[in-house]
Amino acid sequence: MAWTGGSSFSLGLLLLFFLPVRPTAGCSHALSLSYNFNITSRARPGQPWCEIQGLVNGNQFLSYDCRSKEVKPVGPLGMKLKDTAFWERQKETLEDLVEELRRKLLDIKTGIFTKSHPLTLQGRLVYECGPDRHPRGSWQFAFNEQITHRFDPETGNWTMVPPEDQRFQGTLDSDGELTGFLMRISNGDCKGWLQQVLEHWDEMLETTGAPATTPGVVRVKGTAIRLITSILPVLLTCSILPGIQGRLL
Image 1 (cartoon, rainbow, N blue to C red):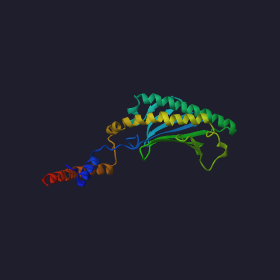
Image 2 (cartoon, rainbow, N blue to C red):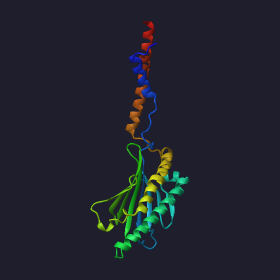
Image 3 (cartoon, rainbow, N blue to C red):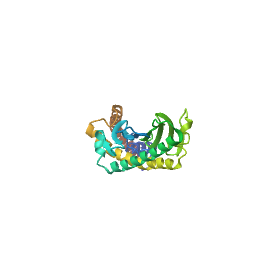
Image 4 (spheres, rainbow, N blue to C red):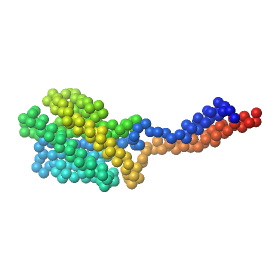
């Protein structure tokens, strides 16, 4: 029998509902993985010269200080991740990062500061799933709590943050070795770290009882399912009727 315009249209609608929807990028959840670190050129007696906090969506899951040299789990997600290979790889990378930045900090202090007070370097590494589900990273640095630099690991570009302190011009942004190191962490290590978190995210939500999605999303999803279920008989009828009518004629 010949296909009519009505039957082709009905078949197209059916395919629209049954074909799988492909995500636009590699993230299954809107997650943000971040690390805040604080490094000082001279620590007080008994105090660590560096501290790191790891967070997922703003909730801490990791702590590290350079005195104990231990990555400690914090909260339910930290406990879920501590026995994975991800934990040791993360520790090694973070240790290398703060060692490199401390060497840089000491070089800056020698060349710029003559006073005896310590110079501190604060930093923030963020690796997150964007609105398009495409994972991307970013870096931000501050000296003595004044933000001075931002770094985009996708382009390799540094940005001085106004008001620019001329004392820090060229301290981080002119170091090609540091630039390459930060790019490798963002575009290499962080992708694996985020994937590990994604793999344990649903399990962690089940353990803590936290909602996996917002109530609004759940309602919309349920409504969509009911709508599809209710219109399928209509669509099937629309696709069958033209064929029956053709045979009768």
